[in-house]
Image (cartoon, rainbow, N blue to C red; front, side, top):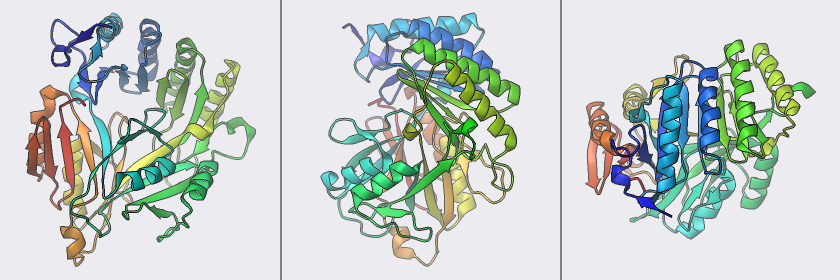
Length: 416
């Protein structure tokens, strides 16, 4: 198989709409509606037939990721990228690769072999080599592990929420052998004391018309597909229904299935109840999917978000909003920040006692890495520093910035 140099993948001789981010050729095309984006999805599934493409349809555009790895981008990937870009131009859709990013959770472990099985179980992830875990659907951040030296025994300021269907939570609890603890009775801990709140989800309503759906912080469902054309047909139908209903859904197409997601809390009313209009849309989507001969696999869906404890939440929140290019959730009772394209996980913030000086001083065992296009790395680091961060490390295409309270984010432009 012919290979190309990743450093030149996005130049004028290659595919200028594309960047290599977290080892994968990736692009984002702006679109004025889900239906307009679905037209591009149909073209992509045609030109990328047989390739391991991941396609994410949003109300504002479409992200496409191909299957190559950094340093070994196949010549076939370049040809597919060019064909996708040509299809987008035919549809008058414009690329904005500068917005691309991919988040990864890094766990500093005293013994990787001891903590990795815990994370694999609670997340429901698969392994990626010996040192990493990945979401089977490619929707939520991967997890990698680094040595913890010296050992840091105190509770982290960063923690993880995982929401899965009730059956999966029950199975995970049986595997870990733990009894959930904490203020909500949901917390589990790995051998180093890193905490995950594992939350069981429920059904979306009681009627059979939405029995394919689950409520797990977002309203979600997943349909198995046998071909890219099946996935594209479902995405087109969902986009039409969503646009007609005024509901900006998240539709993620993979080679073997399609996930449909409301986004966190977006199916709820102001009081936290399920909106009747969303139930009506979910029922219409379920009927359409079954009409296409598709069957649901709700056990595949899940939700992941990250929490940060902070003494000064407004200042810390402002840093992370700028560093990640996120937006503030406007609801007064929440501290959430979110990706405006709904491609990366939500962060939320909780109060930390200012008197807890030892815990505030300890470097966390959990931190985030953000893969960014190489030509945007310097600007992203500068934005983070300007927002109150402090550059604490720089090496081989990686820049680590501490937020105003010492929580770290590493920007990576090395692609791997």
